Length: 438
Image (cartoon, rainbow, N blue to C red; front, side):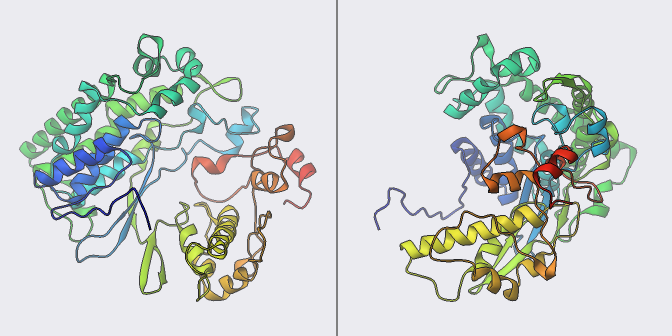
C-alpha cells in the first residue's frame, strides 16, 4: 500500500506529539539522560505554549503509564467541579444552562498537578530541567500554527472587553498571532520562572529546618527518590494549590465576567477547592482482545468507548478496508458512543464490567444491520433503563438548536462531578419536550 508516511524507527528513543517543538524538546530531555517520564512532562508543558488553543496547565489530562516491570496505571488529572457549583446555585442566578464560557464553567484545574505527580514519582529530572523548554519558547518566542490565530480571532471581542490580560498576550498590536511570525508569551514564562524560584527556596528552607518530605507517604510503589528534586516538586504543587498561582486563579474566578448567558457572573472556584484536590492514581479500564490487553482511563473519560468497540466486534472480521469492514466499525462506534451518552460519568457507579461483557455485546452486535443506523440506541446493561441527557435526545431527534433546546437536563446525581455534567435544561420545558424523562 502506498503511503507518504514512512515507517519510523529509533535506536535510542522516540517521541510522538501533536507539535514538532514538543517532540523536539522531549528528545532533548532523553538525549540529556532523562527518562520517558521526564520527556513526557517537558513535552506537555511545551504544548501549553505552542498549542494554547488546545490545552493548558489549568486544563485536564488523563495519563496512562506503564513502568518497566510494573503495572499499568492511570493518573487522573481531571479536576472536579468546585463545591459551590451546584444546581441550586445556578438556578439561584436565574440560569437554565451553565454558560459555556466564563468562570461559572470552570472545574478545579487538574493538568498541572498530574504532570507534577508523574515527574515526582517516575521522573529523574528537576523541575527547572523539564520546564526550561516551555520557558524558552514562551520567553523567546515560536512560530505559531495557523489554528492559534484563527481561534483567537473567534474570541477577539471577549478578550478585548472581558479578558484584557489575555488580549495583552494574544492580541499584541491589536491582531492575533500569525503563522511564521515570532510569537511570545512573557507572562507565562515569568509565571514558570517564579514558580521554579519559589519552589527551590521552599525546598531549601524545608531541608535546613530538617522537615521530612511529605511526599514519601503518598508515592507510588517503586517510585524514584530524588532528594531536593522531590522537595522542589512538592513545593511547586503547594504553590499551585495555595501560593501565588492559586491566589490569581481565585481572584480571576471572583471577577464578574460576561459569559454566553449575556450577563456577567462570578465563578464558584475557591481557595478551598484548589487546596482540597490532588491528582491521583487508579487502575485502568481493560479489555483483552486477540492476545492483547488494552488499557484506557476509566468512564470519567470516554476512554472505555474503544474497549466497547472491540467487544462489539465479531470473531471473524470482513476483509480489511472493504465496505463491509468500514460499515461494521462505524456502526459499532455508534453503539459504543450511545452507551457513553447513557452510562459514562463520575457522579454515579458506571456498570463498566457489564458494558464490556460478552453476553451484553452479543446482543448489541445483533443490532448492526446492512444499512447505516441514524438512531441513538443505548443499551440496558443488567436490565437498567438508559438515562439520556436532553441534549442527546434532541440531537437524536434531529432538532438540535430549535427553540433553544440544544442543552442537557438536570440529573440530580449524588456526589461531586465534572463541570461538563452541569449542563441542564429548565425542568418544565424539558418535560414538555420529553414527557418520558424523569
